Image (cartoon, rainbow, N blue to C red; front, side, top):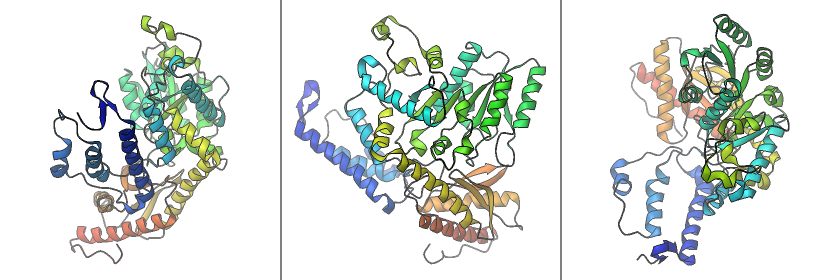
Length: 489
């Protein structure tokens, strides 16, 4: 029997051994948060070495916690790409706050079953409170409600399921749905899972600002009505992943109201910026959505995973997801039971981390951190635009800016290859992670600057290195050979 185990039949540890292991884990987390600037943003997984520790059969006899934690430290946490690093500019970063990590520790340590009032009334109350905070801040009426889910994919799928149930009684026949070509891929995935005929999905070409054109939307709806189709839902974006574009939500809401359509807003990334008074106008009409998605694990600085589906009428969730079974009869009360409001019966206490973070930091500090990210993207645009071989391809919106390196003497195919190589080179260096995307068929570099600890110096140095890499790769593509890096690279 391992020394740390007091009673093998109960798998119980001694109080002393639990404290020792717990303090060691907290030390690891604190060390990570306080030293992350000294780490590479991207690290490589060495399968040759690590597989001998990770890809092995389970032991018949337990090992010491110290040894297991050392394996985690050396072969897992040291091999990560740190999405919470100040110079992680790819995709949507995950700058999770330490308070959120502690909240997750509490939720897991007490194994809180956040599905029923019977099992965790206070947890249900906190989830209801947090959702109430956000519905009020976003301009929804009192009958609005919501439910925490695992992420934007689950929240968007759930929102579309609600739309199908309320609008169509659960059937898709002849239904058509409208969105722009900037809409997140998880929407298509969710519709496919829900059995929606994808031939009836109308992906409209976005305008020069990467927004859903309202005139094209109206025309598409009228064409489908003439064809005998049933327009049902419009999906608007409150901050696209590609460029941070915010659709004209209020104008789209007017169309939906006139045509009797459901308005679903994917604000997984961007809607957090509506908390800022400086930027609220861009989100005008948000409270008119029938369903809205926001991910606290993005721009509200929470650890994975944490997303919220907000609905204009809380009863719609029950109408869509509530089921009955003899073994659930004890729980069928008028109290708030979140298993009746979403897909999951067994669900973790996701609401605790944002509640705890908001209570300790306050909304003012969170809002300032959001505004900081927006200003950084604007600054990144101004710095990149100073270089003659840089072409800004979308102005900074929310906390995203895109640009590409450009040369008149190169073909578009070579320019695309060049920019892909630039992103790969700086990412492989470990100094920063920058990804590419496609805008109007062209490969561009994309910066997302939502980390509260990212500085102007981080932006300056990353862009300087990108310029140096770009010029070196250009010479290589031209057949002149790779020259040594500029001093300081």
